[in-house]
Amino acid sequence: MRKFLIDTDTASDDAVAIMMALAAPDVSVLALTTVAGNVSLEQATRNALVTAEICGSNVPVFVGAGAPLTRAHDHAHWFHGKDGLGDHGYPAPKRAPEREHAVDAILRLAGDEPGLTLVTLGPLTNIALAIARDPAIAGRIGRCVVMGGAPCCEGNVTPAAEYNIWVDPEAARMVFRSGLPIEMVGWHVSRGESVLTDAEIAAIEALGTAKARFAIRTNSRAREAYHVQTGETGLSLADPTAMAIALDRSVGLSWSRHRVAIETQSELTRGMTVVDRLNVSGDDNNRSVWAANCGDATADIVWTFDSVRFKSMLKAALA
Image (cartoon, rainbow, N blue to C red; front, side, top):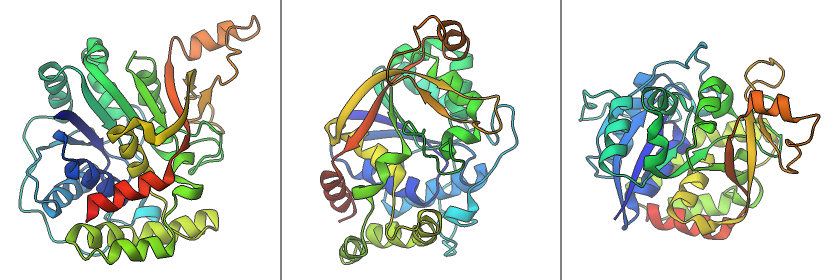
């Protein structure tokens, strides 16, 4: 069994990603760790417990950071609803979260299960705090699949930045510079052919399972918000695209490895993932600036994606 640890600011697309992992027959989800992002920490924790309950899972849920490292928390209610699940009034979960703090759980599990897969679906605050406590954790993680960034420089919260990185760019900078084996799944992956059409949404609803109904209903607000944001019709599921890659890396069709800097100073480009795609950071004019802002930060970046296989994986997980 492959061991997964999922860090999440649980809102509607996070919930679908979590369901995909919990449904995978060869994956053991060791824990869900929650962080403030799309919604408050309390709401993210509640949503993680609700999602696990829908799946019939007792996966432990650990409560983490309630705010970014140095900034005020900026939620995404406008996209996911005030409760993060489309504001449909889901009842409170029957279970409570664990007492151990998420950062302690991350460090413990990384020590107990070296080589585990870490999947991050929200701001990287918890992971940065774990690295600050024990930098050696980077060597204990087998894969670190990060849903975040806009390597093509088309953001979803500013023209330059994707939400998860923008919310806590200082944390993202620490994580990218930590030596973790990062596989960066940017927002662009969930666009285009990866967007569920109305017919594909109806086909999932027709499965008739509690998971399928929950997946579509919780994303009702996100579906509307995506249309307002982009003018496109359908359901874009960023976190599930990252989970698909975590479950099967070959769903990412084209990859390349580059140095990545995270902008933390500029108000215009806060949270921008500056990808050195042409490897010019070593040029004389760039070397000193890049070294100060990036260090040795590198990531494998996925550029194109098998949307047909993704949709098949999603449907199977919800069936």
